[in-house]
Length: 137
Image (cartoon, rainbow, N blue to C red):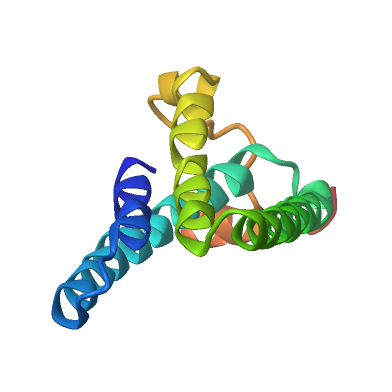
C-alpha cells in the first residue's frame, strides 16, 4: 500500500509539461498497478484461507460490494472537490486516502500475521496436496 500511495501521489504531482507529465504517469502505473495487484492477491489468499468454504462466496461478494460503494463515494466526493476547488485539489484529496489505508493496515492484526492460518482447507487444496478427501461432510 505504501508503493500504491507513492504512485498515486505522482498523479497529483504531474506537471503540465507533456514529457515530464508522461514520466510521472508512467511511474504511477509501474508503482501502483503492480503493487495493488500483489496486494489484491495476498488479500484474497488470506480471505480464502480464513473463511469457511460455505461462506466464501458471500464474504467475497460483500467485500466487492463494499469496495464498489467506497469507489462510488470517492467518485462523488472527487467530483464535488474538482468542481468547487480544482481538479488538482481533487487529485491531492484522492492521494491522501493512501496514508489512511496504510494506517488502517499498520494498526490491524494483519500486520502481525506471520503465516496464513491453515485450519480451514478447501477440498480442492487438499486434492492438490494429495490428501484423501471424504465424499461427504
